[in-house]
Length: 471
Image (cartoon, rainbow, N blue to C red):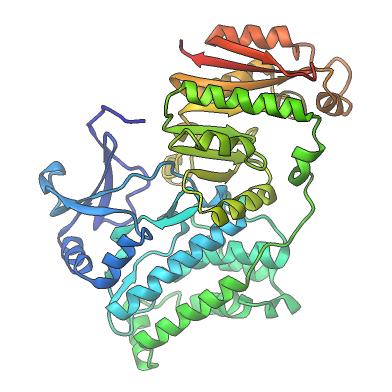
């Protein structure tokens, strides 16, 4: 999907480094560089390590353009656009770990070339399908002797600490990262990792010693800390050894395998083989009817069965699923397949990612990012309307609002008599959902969409609809 709007728009999440700033002009992503940043870019662009990272696709494609497109900046770069911007609290454990390893690899390769990264935040990484990519070219800076890694604190709070929470305690990290854009503070971690937990891999060094060092140097200036490090013999080689040690630690971390009902959902749900075959045919026809959609959202993707079908015909598919374990299983499968078109994300559709950070816009909410050419909402409506008590009209509104004007929504209505709907209704007071009926659902759809076709599945308790939004 392309945009004809060529007005220069500032990226709301790009303001913390005054040396460079990101802008949007139509589909172009531009970065303005100040005088020092422009000089650093010239050195960086001439280095072998950086050109190799670009060629390998580990850093997003970047090229200089005419500075006149952004008046007031010394130099301007144009970056390849990321198909769908996501946030670390929408990633699974395996995704965060792989993004962390990429960040460490980039730093490990930069240090011998005389460069470091000023930042260590997980927000500097994005995804092309199941492959992470580093996007903050402005973070690279020349390395001075005795210089500590300026991004270490950010790295711990947004990458390492969330991984330690999940690996050592079995605690899902997503709510922690969503709650604070700066990540998990060392003081919080120290309270969680007391006693024998202090001896778990990575905890003593990167939680307790890190926290103690922060307290000791709280009143010291950056210049004082640098002088202390130089006096102590801190060198580039020592920095490189530290990065390699953290890499080794991160590779050893893995999520605990906790039982999840949703992992086996495709096997335990009420579909017959004939239902599933007809559903796959319906989805295939709906996606192909949209030509070659730029973005497809699969809401409630589970094991990715329909996301894979959509990916045969679409440029990008974002597969949204609530259960972190299910998303992690899907991600690892996609990674093993080398899939470049499907991005799996962790998100509760009844509580989607809000806007966050400074003024609530530094990190865009899901509603602001989710405007797709095709939206798949299969076996979702009953979970929201019955399972989460969301009024049916509001469920329809949410789904329709995810579709760009002229785009298509493929939605499944599970009849009240379906076995899965009955299971949900069994835990609710009688008569709580008088509007949860097929005729009411069709009325709500028709009020906002044009129904192109519908198909009742052979089981007789589920109906599929293909509708055009705004048509």
